[in-house]
Length: 126
Image 1 (cartoon, rainbow, N blue to C red):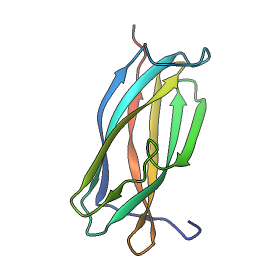
Image 2 (tube, one colour):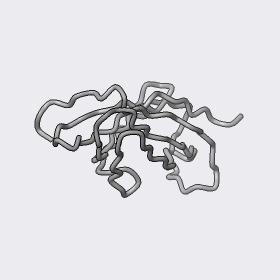
Image 3 (cartoon, one colour):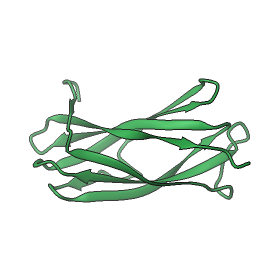
């Protein structure tokens, strides 16, 4: 996707739920896993195929982890107007953190499009 991304305003992402999940696998330096549930809603008049995502997770001290990759949970959802795609995955953190990002897709005309993933907080259990 070499040309400029167009933000597609009617392709909307909602954060449905964020839950601390201590039984999920996590590395020693980031021992706190949080599962998040997301829905991508296509309210536009275009067919959109999600091709990738980018996450930025920022901890309370300002440290950042950037995660980029193809697809969404191993899939490339194709959303016709009015359709939605829901999934869940998780981030692992070391301290209270905020996650945000974007999904990158292609319209049926081959135009690269972008939609933002709203910020959400992952607060460690006390």
